[in-house]
Amino acid sequence: MTSIAILTVLALGLIGCDGHHDPLGTPTQAVHILCTGGEIMSYEKYAISDKKAIGVVFYVNHSEDISGIGYAVYLHDLPAEAFADSMGVAQGTSADLTAYDGNENTFALYDTQDVSSPMAMQVFDLWHYGQSAYVPSVAQMRLLYAAKGLINPFIAACGGDPLPDEADDCWYWTSTEVEGQETAKAWLYSIGSGAMQETPKIQAHRVRPIITINK
Image (spheres, rainbow, N blue to C red):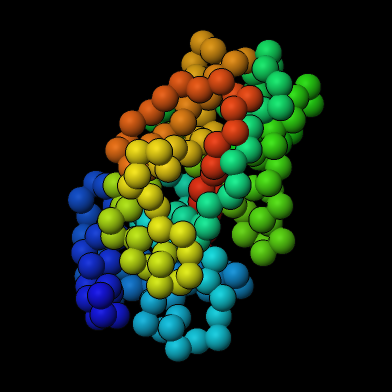
């Protein structure tokens, strides 16, 4: 796919879920590569720059229910880790399937004293770039799944890992615990089909961090 074709696809696709369309060329559509220094720019501009990409914008916010101006997905998967290193402790996430609260959930997992979250710990290690990456909630994973076809060419062009379609390779942790079973289970999400699965928190699965864009 050419750079022009990619930019056209993104311009059509990166809109809010409320159906709001900005004119072509506005910042929310034309700047879509997130770099380690915090810069956000079009792929065309990024390709001729000396910047290092860290993520690709997958959602532009037009909703009062969502903080920030949008979300970017990290270019790479993180290795499979457990949600918790033992069961029996609720780790303080909201367990709300409609909440865009992955950032708050990830901090709750990190901050819980009675049990450790290997999953959250490795996400916090990404902060050396100065970007507050976190494990997406179920609601945020739904947004990522909806944008997969649009962003995969950009992820690949930036040297990242495209989001998979294969049934055996598409399950990722969310940061949302299962309501009523918070001490034992959290939600896995299939980026291949959009399905969800209640899963014991001591199982190891991959994570795809996201980043809130705040400027």
